[in-house]
Image 1 (cartoon, one colour):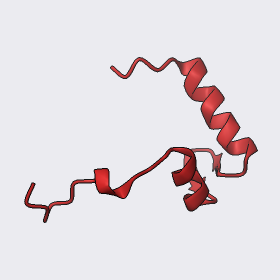
Image 2: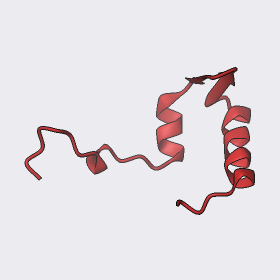
Image 3: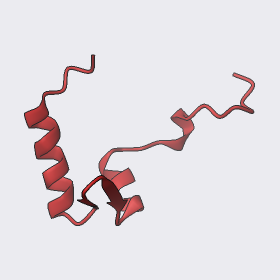
Image 4: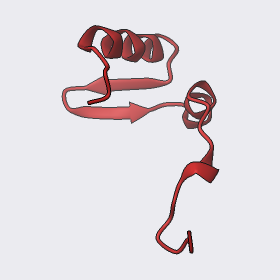
Length: 55
């Protein structure tokens, strides 16, 4: 549905792991540097819609 291939997703995850942003063992994913990962993904909390938002 998103048009992402397994190859692309794997490359992005491996890059994030190489940068030390994320790590995983078995089925557990650890985010090592939330702020750096948010900057890399250009995360904007204003895009979140919380339950109490009147919008």
